Length: 296
Image 1 (cartoon, helix red, strand yellow):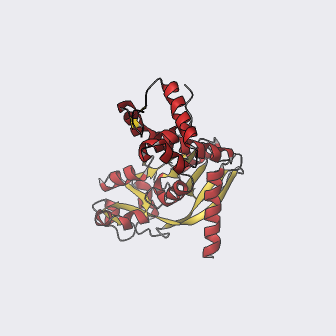
Image 2 (spheres, one colour; image 1 turned 135 degrees about the vertical axis):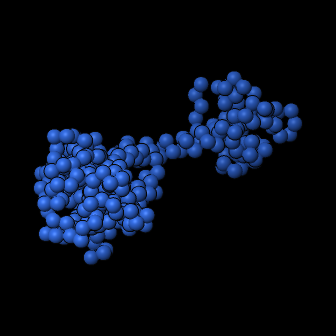
Image 3 (tube, one colour; image 1 turned 45 degrees about the vertical axis):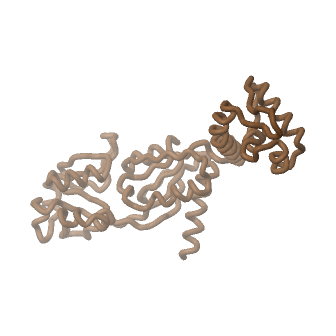
């Protein structure tokens, strides 16, 4: 069986127009070419598709059943060809993006929508991980792009473009002992259990760790749940509180005595210099670079 796209188009057009001659006019072919194509299709399928007893061909029940599948099949064939062409032009087969867990509440999906509009056939996989694990995924090329916080020390293999600023604040449940203090000293911080978002690798020391006693989790949603239960204090995204009024009613931003209780970081789009980036990854990087130019 050797059925091609042109045969399917002719078959579909004959059923929709009601005759070989009308299908030929619509497709810019001679009627004999349309008739021959249908005859070859019937031979390939070992089916009678049209009854030719009157002036116009009448679709058989088998033809009507196949017609219901033809439209979707032609769409899929066109999508396949478009995707194959895009791959030939340098589009990656899949794009893996890791989003640092504290940034899940931000509008990161705007970038995914942009990619979907530009590359509708691209397979995109989204992962969430603590900062240290996100960096590991980049460097071992499990992910091609990462949305993550800036760091003081950069790996020589990294490259990045800045996206925005993001603030993190220390919080505790309203009834937690630290939340009842007008100002919290460093000694009091040290002695209170901290719920910290950290790598799943227990050998990596968490960032923004202040307390001697701490519990670890790999995302800020579970951290927030534990903090609200009064199990400890922790550092959460300020925008997360701003977007959820019920959190503002249950959590208190702590006022540290010796330093400003607000940690501001740039959020970066990061990639590895060693990765062979495809068209979609390069498109997103260039889009963000151009957006930065336009806002300066």
